[in-house]
Amino acid sequence: MDAAELRALTNEELEERVVELKTEWRDLRFDEAVGSLTNPMRIREIKREIARIKTIQTEREMAREIEEQLTS
Image (cartoon, rainbow, N blue to C red; front, side, top):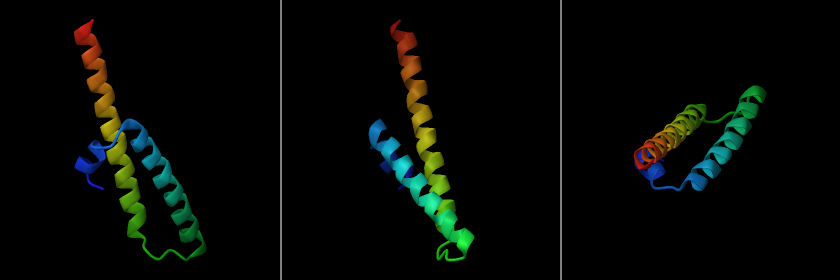
């Protein structure tokens, strides 16, 4: 997913996506350890997508804090 698609998701959906990606990442690391990894680039893609999600979550949190400060 690209950043625009991720931004369209709710906070709960983003959290669910992170859990799914971490599970897939764990499975791929296991496959790599036993030598049966078929697509090593997928590990990199997962790490980048998790980073995108975390960035979006941070942006939302910062925007919420700024909004709270302005309304106080």
